[in-house]
Length: 249
Image (tube, rainbow, N blue to C red; front, side, top):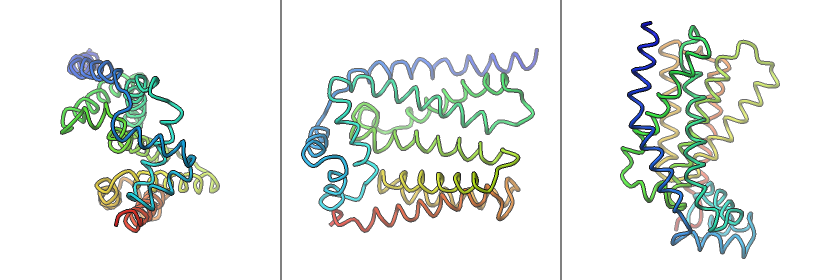
């Protein structure tokens, strides 16, 4: 009875968040190409996908992940932009639920984890958007959304993958190296979204490594430790690539 009341309280507490996300999805359905979006898609059509990334890297800034994500614009077109924000919010919620499920104590069964993870994930998204200084620019406009909100979705996915990997009892050596490579590539890609995220990501992973070792979350030179170190290396390499871009001049 006590557990049921706790789940019910959390679910009721998340109702404002659910309503808010539904409104964001509805307002986002009116999104279309705005300002820089036309320039981005024109360069993709002119140079092609890979050459457009090179063009922006050498002539504008080092945000290579942004230029990579802009490749979706050519596929979507202006008439499909109405699906982007609702789809992104749904994917972000799913990824966050997966991350929270793996963070919750293992003593809970799957149904209990899901009943807690869904409302908690809704609250996480609600609070994140509530604290956002400019939701129209960071969510409804592609140019801001792919730089800030999309990076948060991938960051949530990284947390989920790390928790999943950390809690697996036995992982073969080959699979471990595969996970290390995924960690490196995800953090390298995340570092290329913005000049604010890249150094923050480096410091966040360093802090997580120190916190994990101090609280015995994982041991030194354990698979989880190497997973984060691979991510840290990826974030540092991404930061360097971002900084040395000729377009920054």
